[in-house]
Length: 484
Image (cartoon, rainbow, N blue to C red):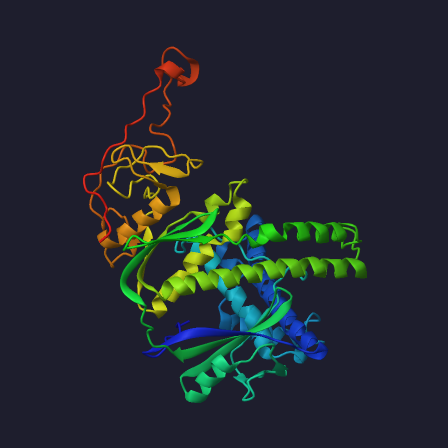
């Protein structure tokens, strides 16, 4: 399917608003989302049934030419097969007319995309982790979502209601002026709408083709390096040498005591049990809603803080340098996983990526193995080892004493001067000049790898303490990175 391309000067932008549906409208919303889930499960079962049938026939010795044909999973093929089945299938015949056709189209489109991702992953054409075969979505765990692409989709003129197919007019919890004014002025055109239940509320997201002019940043010639951390959320150093520290709000840590109390109340109630089919009690549902309310408030506070931080950075600097952090690997550290997840390192980079495009500035990602904390921001000397508990950087060459995070932020800001705009990666071998550094400076702590071959004197090749090699001494780089 051909991807939609906006016209020149326009971008595809989402406008999300919270809804306040009444009881009847909420039942209709849940029915549409349930219809999308049912259509998805039908498509997964319909396609995979031919796979299992062919495998059974192969075990019987049936020749290849006589096996059951593969069922296609393209969206047009799934739509045609579903329209022929829904009238007679007892799973849909009694209620499919209650919902819009867009509900079932949403589930079929998601199934087609899931099968495409699985096929491309098996063929090695898809980047990222290996994708498994699509599975059925359970009723209690599936995310409630439905997308509308045709029909009456608009924002009402009063600025407090939206109109969706089969659902009618629904009141919004907040004004829709930011989209309504653009539509009335002709600078935006609604393409689709997606309703979704998230954090205890219903939201509608309008995908619109909107005209967007580049917003000039306050300091187009300045660059900033951002070092993310747990104690301080971000340490920012600009090209002029100014350092600013953004403290970590720690919203989850502040709410842990309240979450502990609410979770204790939930554990004392009679909850659901899928093994025995036991349904939750009314008191459990009430206590679980109170606990979820605390979780939702923490998530909203975190989103608000991250958006304020990234918006201020993208609107001020012409070049932003960030670290290419392995967040998934960092979350495996059981001592720091909770704080890293609460800080939202991945979300900060994601927001900076699209917000810098709005302002026409560039964002650079430092190489993952670039030793920003081990490099002296004054003379360029690189330490072979700098444990995480050492929070002060002391240079043995120029005797500079500086905070570890401040030093890393200054080095990231200096990378903007030596990088090019072609790759978007600062500190690469292709973009930055070759810099001498001691062996192991870009690794954790080891300077030499353990030998596999056994040596004389000790079983297994292990060396005694007096036989271990000395670490590589710190030395100065051939060319220091300086701020311009």
